Image 1 (cartoon, helix red, strand yellow):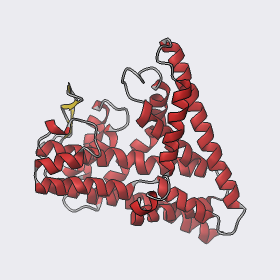
Image 2: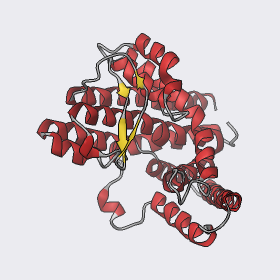
Image 3: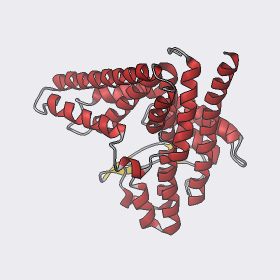
Length: 328
């Protein structure tokens, strides 16, 4: 870990994981204060207005997009470093880092959104489609109930990697500055990293950087899901391993296929497959060799697996803190 006082880092990360798991994103708080990710998004929007010239040649758009990325990453890292240095100089300042770290993790909010899909599936296809439209970009009106269930589990798998494990990895490596820099990169990818005419060139640097910084977490997430499957009665950790080896690289994303394949194999289902975005059909490989008829029960079971994988990660961080604290 490229940080000083690793026992302090592990202490606030352990608390941040627990705070996120218990509190999530309380609406009463974010109705009164802007969420840090919202502030990151506003900064990206302002820089985009300054830098993006839609009439510019593609090469210039790519350079200006790369400049936006550099400014955002440097700014987020610098802000994280400033907060870390201030916190290090005050009594119990690590609690400040824990509070900010907990805000930047997304396990509880991910659980709540996916559970809402399962409850919607219980009520009928219209309620299910409304719930799943909150977490995926594909056309909800073209989905039947099994497709809604698959979309929810895919979202759980991918966002476990991007929203929980990747921030944790970069915090372990670079402390709070690494965590904030990662969130800036991930937010840029969400806002400008897609292949629309407006962002195809301008957002290329953001998309490529996001792919690279998420690579270690996607592989680690798959391992955590396999370990979690060992604790879930009826799950198949061996099938998860085989599915990851066979199918993870079939996904159009270089990273999302890893945790999705682990979930598919562990739960005995198939994920991905054909879907539609903005009315345009998209051909995608199936991941997994189990049932394609995913039910609300499968979605709920995926949430149990999600928490077991989270528990393995949180337990490892907490155990590391305990070992370091006991030896100091």
